[in-house]
Length: 123
Image (tube, rainbow, N blue to C red; front, side):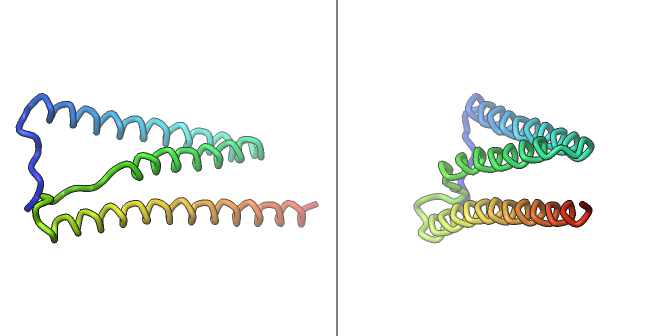
């Protein structure tokens, strides 16, 4: 019922290399975003804050564009239940990622609005 890994060792090593390369690139981008957020908070700079939020949204949309092209296929296509589960998992991952982006953007907007209100009260 489950799909088998490739029997070809060359293809398997290429697949592992591609996956590890993608994970390391994502971690590098997250590290850069974290450093930007740290500097923006320490400097209390609105320009750096905006750069961080734009970078975060660009990061999420970039990886979401990869998810839209993927089709999760854990099961063999000859089973009706397997293909239905594959479709369900693909839609679930895509919708979950879209909801994550929407919730993140809502929280960013709320934090910026509350920050603006606090700054007006201090003046």
